[in-house]
Image 1 (cartoon, rainbow, N blue to C red):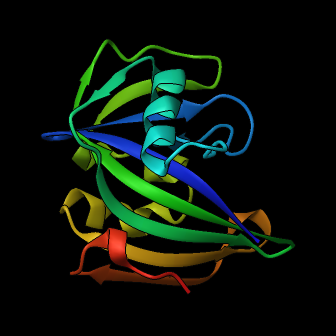
Image 2: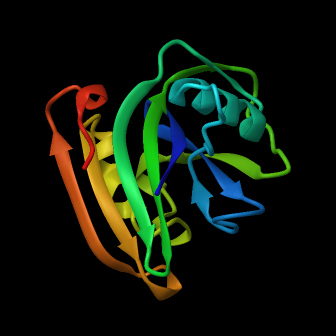
Length: 162
């Protein structure tokens, strides 16, 4: 069973906006902004809604879809299909919410040790504006048991998933 989720990172020149997760899944880790796709909502609409709820900013202009990653956890049959977006323009000031505390990081100072262990593999592709698909299987202690990450040349929206 697959569950669709979104993740958006604001990439502004030499900086990225990440959020410290304050509650729920991933607490205590820096991450992009995102979450569940609600019924009747497109993936893009969910992305815009989640970043507004979590960081208090409104995305302006087009979201750029960068990748699709499947995440599996060894003792959980649910697959998390995460659609990863880049945004450059927004209005408002990033503001702490009940769920996230936003902070800007220079791209050469991204806190990978305080993030999900898969981020160190795909974020460098994201920063180079490369499109990608992949899969990560996590074991106990969030160790990566299996991984597959592939850069793609084609339009990411036309990729058929396994």
